[in-house]
Image 1 (cartoon, rainbow, N blue to C red):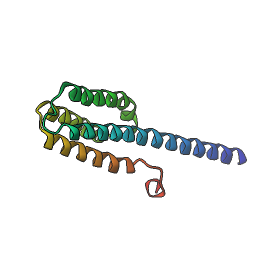
Image 2 (cartoon, rainbow, N blue to C red):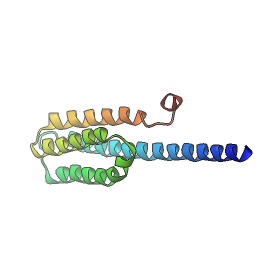
Image 3 (tube, one colour):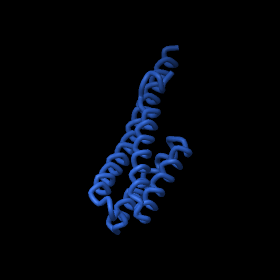
Length: 131
């Protein structure tokens, strides 16, 4: 009987540690993307009139490619619809920069940042997410 309890407690500990590691990875991925988007927003703000510069497009493309590296692992951990929404947002940002549409690019960046901040709350380790 004692062996069963020890095994159950060990499984619960392993499961708990796995959940914490998963939460840290997901939230770190979202935080890194938010930080990158905020830096891009700052650079767009400094060149409002002409945002279709090649270096800005390359920066947006680099953010998108960096996100793709994380997506391979994230697809195992989170819902695909959430990843798809982020992908669509990043693609729109690139298009708006290429079309020199500052207003839409900044609106999309702000929207994506807000989405990521709220979405990451779903993956934090808290009592309301456990029960």
